[in-house]
Length: 94
Image (tube, rainbow, N blue to C red; front, top):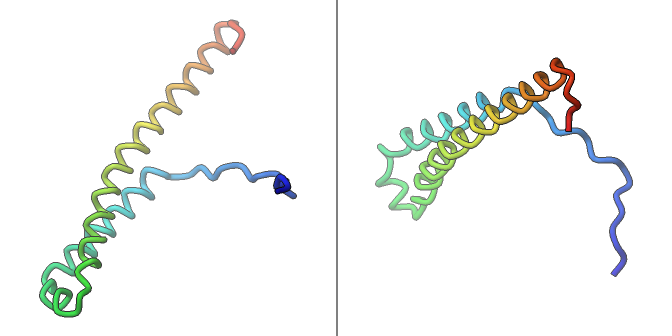
């Protein structure tokens, strides 16, 4: 089997308000869950309870995602601050 070679260089990763995006998505999952809970009987009658539990799982995983992106954002800021400190003291950056 031949090795696949990309035709184009990969684009730079998008950076933006990652924490806000994940938080907004998590809120949306929980809102969808709360909207569906009063109709749980209907979902159960139609064998669609997985919709309700998918929304709850999305909200739970979103909480994990919020924790992760906040830690990642803090680590990126610490790294940039350390690089700035090394640059101002005259010590060569590694």
